[in-house]
Length: 240
Ligand code: GLN
Image (cartoon, rainbow, N blue to C red; front, side, top):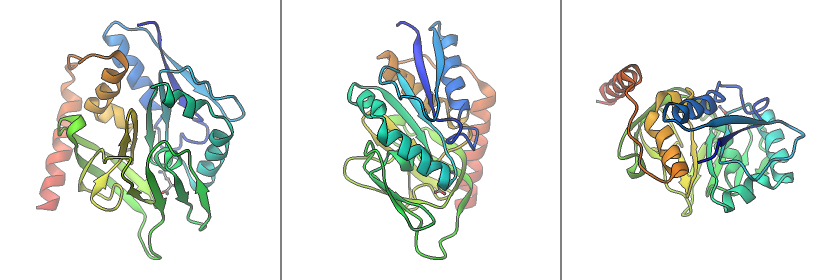
């Protein structure tokens, strides 16, 4: 394929938790396999192009999240790109922004982009903020691979019929009902920071399989595999 263009969407507001690293992981994994790839940052105030191959949205605080939503709802590039088959990975605040609606901790409801069938609310008064390691068992699209990362959010997310969970929580909170993340077509949302793709190569390669249109040989990265295996085993022990 020609140079893969990986959009880093509003990193100055959706970049609080190091999620921009996901763009570099995808670039590297493409380059290691002989493909050209470039990261295209899209900043506040700029148009959102509809021609990129992959769009990445990270996490952010409630105020930053509201700003990002306002920006993305005014500029229709992301929705158009998804209609045309683009791939999206959205982390935490990004996941919430892509849903149909989310409520901030100030009680104000915001209409999301509607690219995932999810609604997010802060939970009943007294619901604790979810701040911990998050470990999940990936669903069928990940072949059951373990997912690990860390989470830091107040929102609790409910999935409608138009989205399926990315996995099931082994340890931590995730969506808040035992499921973790949401998938609709080639749009994926998750509560995993990390950056998620550095810690979960199977998730990175799922996105790249969609991009390239064929299965990929795994890359041999023993350190990553070891970290994931350790986290998964520790989470299972905590649950037992
Ligand atoms: N502001 C959102 C929440 O607390 C998202 C936080 C985040 O992106 N880590 O639920």
